[in-house]
Amino acid sequence: MKNFWTKLPKPFFALAPLDDVTDAAFRRLIARYGKPDVMCTEFTSADGLIFAGDSGQAKLRAKLLFSDSERPIVAQLFTSSPERMKKAAEHVAELDFDGIDINMGCPDRAVEKSGCGAALIKNPKLARELIRAAQEAGLPISVKTRIGYLLDELDTWLPELLAENLSAVTIHARTRKEMSDVPARWDTVARAIEIRDKMKSKVFIIGNGDVKDIFEAREKARVSGCDGVMLGRAILGNPFLFSNSQEFKNRKEAKLKALSEHLVLFEELLAETANYATMKKHFASYIKGWSGAKELRMKLMETNRVLEALAIINGDI
Image (cartoon, rainbow, N blue to C red; front, side, top):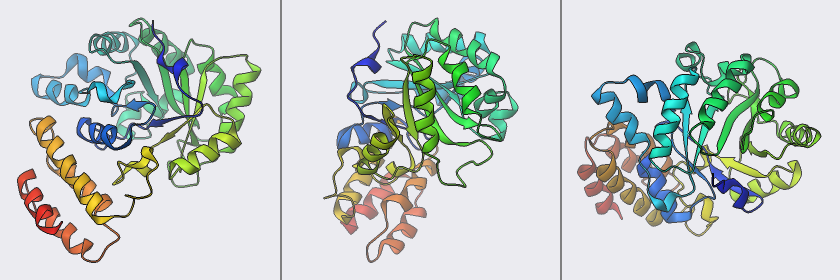
């Protein structure tokens, strides 16, 4: 088994999986403008990959589209069934992904109701069974989780994960109860390093939460001692994030050009499987900070297809 994690620079920077945001179109755009050291797909239902009908299968498989420009690329899966995790992981391996990440931190109530996501923090036995099931596919396995469910449980929860043969654990430095309503507590990431080192584990620890740019990511890594940093919401409207480019950060022309490319990639890769409304979620992130931005954004929100939006943007550049 080739383990790409061991070949990454230190600290390394990863793109977080954001549902309905970091889809195939946006990831390909990010890879053009400044690829991170690791990219991750949107979280994908292992149950759906096994049981969904034709329409559902098409939508789920679109989440797993990727190009070589995105490597190393990790597929994030969620389920509460070890058997279905094994089958989905085997499918992901057949698609030639570089790794699999298991979501053990999503606070969505529908996800938790089926015993997935953050609910697994309350069920360490099942969490470990899922890890072992995924490992049967032969790919490096990582986990993205939180520091606890209602309270900080890192001292008991993290050792359960580290006891398995994982490659990396991403620590979102909040509890499930805290959602994203409080500042991320990066002191818990430093504590995760202490726990890892005390266990003499070689698992990489990745910090996550409230990191706005690469400058801050480097500082968080330096202070906490983590091996890598995962950035999520900072990517919205900013495919230049990982290139660390300040030149393009607030330039109207650069942002509109990037949005145009994003729209074209959406049409090319996802028009048959995703709703155009998905693209509208990005408009507010791209279009802000200059005179007339609000008016342009309102015009784009009234569009119903990519060609309409491109015509408006081209007329404004």
